[in-house]
Length: 295
Ligand SMILES: C[S@@+](CC[C@H](N)C(=O)[O-])C[C@H]1O[C@@H](n2cnc3c(N)ncnc32)[C@H](O)[C@@H]1O
Image 1 (cartoon, rainbow, N blue to C red):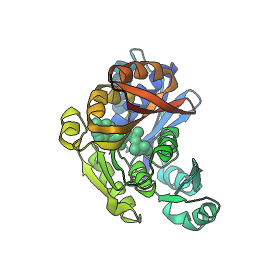
Image 2 (image 1 turned 180 degrees about the horizontal axis):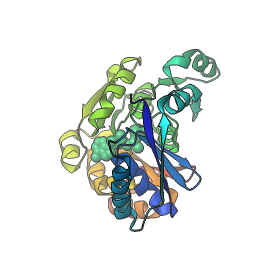
Image 3 (image 1 turned 90 degrees about the vertical axis):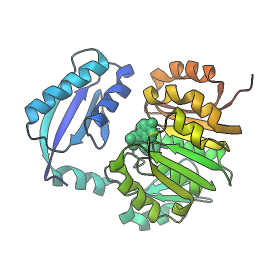
């Protein structure tokens, strides 16, 4: 852990650019991206030359949104941010059955779980990987997943991050879960989360990038569910491969999509012969559940 962080904030000029800017902040090395009114904020390892770093960051973000980004930066001591943020987290129920908790508050979680019928407790150490349960896109995918998993399924989790969706899928009854993550830095956190879970053994964790070739190699026999909470720019080109990699009654959950982007994504899904069956909206984010359309 560094002893201080560079906090970089960028003003979001329009709803449409939120996804691209969040992706840009992750690509710069941001460990988590927070939304605060019309600003996105991330914490980065301290660069040797912060002014040059911020100038290069502005240039990269300008390419993504096509206009000059409004940026602010400051230093923050580690004690101020990461430990306070971790301490402030509390177990939360998502949907009907899933409770997401942190390793140090399992007692509190057990009290919450006591009031839930057939609870699925997912314990996640909120380290650097994305997927603490604090983001609306993760929660949207969890709620939709709860409605489709009945037990015995084969699931693919594209971009597993902390492993949160893979673990929830196994807890909701999936028999085998393939959890793929392209960022090697997330693997340690995901592995630790799997190891502390009673269902971790049903999850196979792989460091790879899911693309059309990967889906063709692993999509036989088809997956009963593919869950992909990544950005729309990553999802859209993967849609035909998702369609081919699911079984006849299989489903796809797409997340990481701003509500304003949903119509464009839905155009692409119908082109890929995937039909919308349910949707979830929270804090301006859209998550869709889709099934095969045979025509
Ligand atoms: C928004 S995070 C989601 C994490 C977690 N699944 C959740 O729902 O909270 C997206 C993750 O997908 C990974 N990712 C993006 N494109 C990918 C790809 N083509 N194959 C595998 N992982 C990918 C990113 O590195 C990131 O960790």
